[in-house]
Image 1 (cartoon, rainbow, N blue to C red):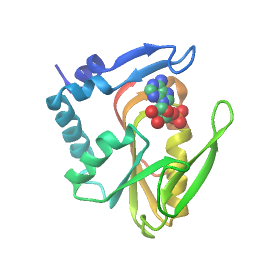
Image 2: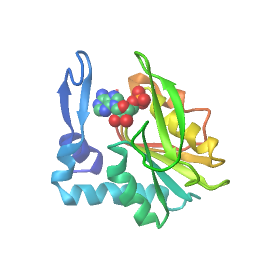
Image 3: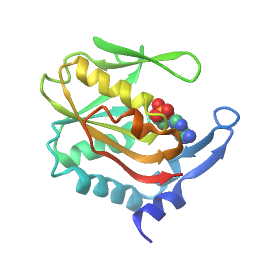
Image 4: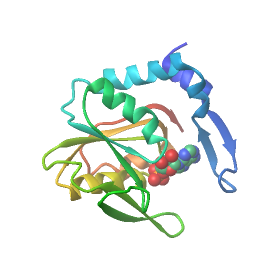
Length: 177
Ligand code: AMP
């Protein structure tokens, strides 16, 4: 079975979570298989090891799961982007709109050095608002966006269009129409 099919088989579709109408893509069964987890990190490594990337930012919380191992494989730093109030030291924050209301994401101030080319990593691309907020945080710190990587993409929500103004590539290992 190819990797795409293995990922699809492992992802659990949970209807109406966290609210009615949402088909939640639960990636946690992937971690029951160390082999599949390693294959995923290996695939991301193959896709990005020739790119000029100086660091990875992972988005809370599922973006940490493959973001850190990938950064370790690439031999580059990993920085956490978290919801407001979770990071302990000085932060910079970026507020953005959700379907209902707004939210704020933060990164530790000074972790990204000016000119650093930074890859944004998360488990899933939906509307692209979260990944765009991560890209804005990178820019606020003087870094440059090196591209985006996701395990899963929900194509209908057109996240790619939302991210089109940033540096490419936008990579997803598995997508749903
Ligand atoms: P968005 O900002 O709309 O691209 O949403 C992406 C963020 O929300 C990611 O951090 C995902 O983990 C989470 N997310 C959005 N929709 C889903 C979904 N259907 N299943 C699992 N996670 C989702």
